[in-house]
Length: 254
Image (cartoon, rainbow, N blue to C red):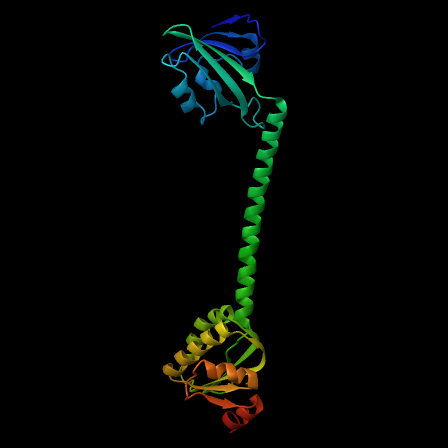
């Protein structure tokens, strides 16, 4: 390969139809170093494009391509490539680099994209931690407490939502299957707001517990909550009591 002087101070190559470099300008060598094949200066995504357009069947063509970064920390360089075939064997290739400001913008965009990806992973991790914390809080809002050998208490705290009911459903159903549990007291004293979807899931949960065997007793239901429960067609066999003290006196004081 030999160096040639060109009229324009731009990277220039003369290649054969196999893309082997026959000669190049000093600007080309200064920019990309000594190369044997033109394809070696392009990034992987541009090579198919070059092979498609740079051939003797297309006598003249101009395409935008991406070149390998000069430094490892830089992103790909963008250039307009002009190709003219002298004959079926040899072609002249000239590269006109895009404005350096565009290169800086591209580099900045790549850096921002990398930072955004990192941020997305961090946010996803925090989201998963938050969801787990919420699920754990929901599970703790309905503990299963053994009062006697045959009676258990489930005090409900906060709002009755479908998310909370789904979170405690499996735990309560498993706990309800313990040997000797004949009765479960569900205490609504600390319940605030009751959502319609939440009470529907709760109703399904009570039905499942009832058919598993234990007697179900609801405690501390306020008038507005009683109205919502009645709209859900609760099981007729479910019992109600006004206060936890009353329930403990009846079922636990022996």
